[in-house]
Image (cartoon, rainbow, N blue to C red; front, side, top):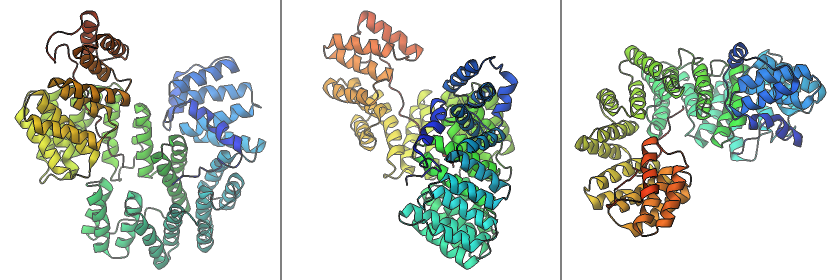
Length: 596
């Protein structure tokens, strides 16, 4: 679904002007509270120009908290500058500095009532304050005024519920027609509104319609199963959770739901009022935008969603994930700390906070944090896995293997959800020269992964296949594994490099040249791949081209130990033998964590 971001089409200039700063300041730069941290540490400039330039520099450094501070000072120097105010408004909102954002939005609306993003922010503030007619006024002024503006329509519907007009709320939602995705949002929110209004039968009909059209969205699955359980149909609720669990095993929200319905406990209603409903709208649209790569809009919507419902655990986890991907671990930790203590996602947030500490360059704190979690929850396989991953990333492979041993020992019957533990332990064991055990682990990971799961199988096939080639074992099977990995991930330069490098190690230079050239097309800026291509060029007599590739690899910031080998080849050429002066291939990209 192409998400219609509120107000972005109301006047052509608004999108560019309102988001210009956010595009200049990479997404996800600060968490709620970051402005206070920046205020404590920053000295502002004495001039408008100085503060403005400082804001741009802060943005380039991915620090919206600092940018907010400088822009706040810049506005004092030129309070009538509408463009500056609009930039500051977006920075405040993205930074989670809500009072500043609302003050800026009020001033923007006074000067330009058609500013859609400002109207949305003020409308959300009115919803929070239960001023529902005021909220609708702002939402209608900021949007396009047509049913296609899904944000305005959905939020207006929830405002009518807040006003005690459930029927009017559902009538408002009926304006959403046409695209299948619009129908899904319509039925989903109609079901939630009718449920909050106590119209159980009508609510069940609408929510079931939404669920039947989309059974792979966690939030929808959870809310439908909760309704089934509250209606006393625990078997149906268990079946709903169970179907999703087969698709994405062992998710904490599903685990929690299955445990409750097994005990015949009805999970409480998650969306019970207009504020929670409006937060659900914003979270849903943010999630859709995030999946489409529109992290700027997702960030703004998530800030507003958490403002409306500070306990929205999925919104918190999604925001933290965006901040981590934007390489803002400190701000991600601040967000994760806001996770409600009673949420089934709290352990996930605590684990992610530990991993973020590692990314902040605080390894001792990260290990201490995760060990404390493990001491508190000794059966927490996820916490053990996270600690093992930290050790593995630091190349402490013995410690990693020992930690994975503990995690796997906690699993009574390993299933598909546990494939990565065997994969990672296999890597650790291979690096400490325990190959028979490593091979067994890697084959176990393959066993746990059904064939359709292309990406994950490709990772395991790549590592196992290359390791066998490297040791000159089971060569026919190993090459078949690498070819299959390339078939599954044809645009993964690292996997293609592994196949080419395997051919190189076997002295099959024509095939190696073909695949390594393809790998470089896919990853032209990777130093290892460029180095490998240089090696095969040298072996085939293309020594001038080999020197070019090695020089290029040298300039691409290779690992220090690789740089020594590359420089030696540039100076002296290659020694005899296919593996002389060789740089080992990179591992294919590892799977990303499940952000919930």
